Length: 158
Image 1 (cartoon, rainbow, N blue to C red):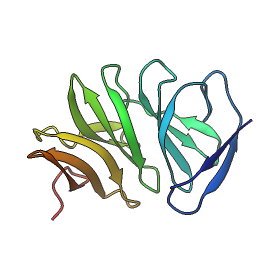
Image 2 (cartoon, rainbow, N blue to C red):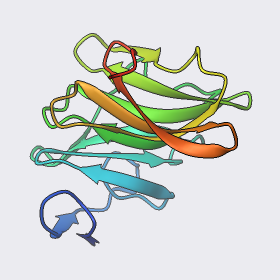
Image 3 (cartoon, rainbow, N blue to C red):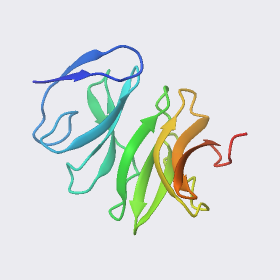
Image 4 (cartoon, rainbow, N blue to C red):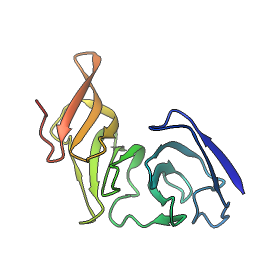
């Protein structure tokens, strides 16, 4: 049994107890797992448990990993995932061949798409709001980091 104490999470600090699964099918593994985000029902995180840095989703109520078909790619290094409160939308940053992008994944349609392909800038640290309709992220333009907010369609929010 592995015990995790989560702080700096939305809501209150919580103590999570989930069994350790050596096969990597549970929440805890011997691999590196960074930047978890916790909602009332889900924990989304990045892990290198399969040999590449991928996004994983854990259902805290059912105590099992949820399959994310079409999300992870062997040629991407994923980081900083965030999930809407209902668990439908995930955003994350990924680096592919030296270019960083922010991706939106819809669990209902199992489709992933880049929100930032048209930006000639470095992007990182996306966060989706609870409703899943706004995505904030950092962007490096003109030598400094700024915050951009996009809607789910990939348009800047004004």
